[in-house]
Image (cartoon, rainbow, N blue to C red; front, side):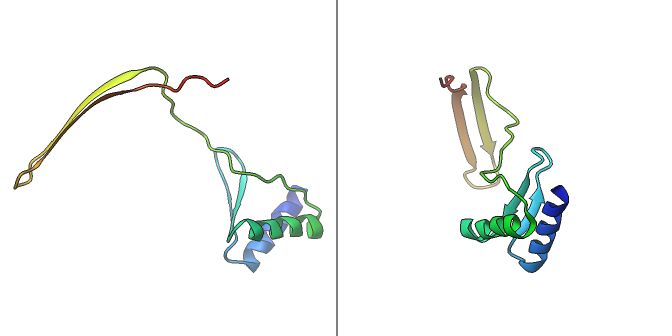
Length: 102
C-alpha cells in the first residue's frame, strides 16, 4: 500500500508541476498542495481509482512549540537615536493564558 502511494505521488508530481508533495518532519504527514481543493480532490480520486490507495484527507496538523503557562508582566522601553528626532516608545502590559475550554 505504501509502495503504491509513493508511486502514485511520484507520477502525479512529474505530470503536474503545480502539484507539490512534501513530508512534514515533525508530524510525519504527507502534505499535498496544489491549485485548490478541487485540484487535490482529482488526484486523491485518481490515487484511489488507479492505484487502489485510500487516503485520509484533512487540514494539516500544527505542532505548537510554546504556550503561555502563567500571567507575566512586561515593561519594555525602545530608544533609538539615528539623527533627527529619533524614536522612543514604552510598552507596559501583561500576557496570560486563556481560560480552559470545557
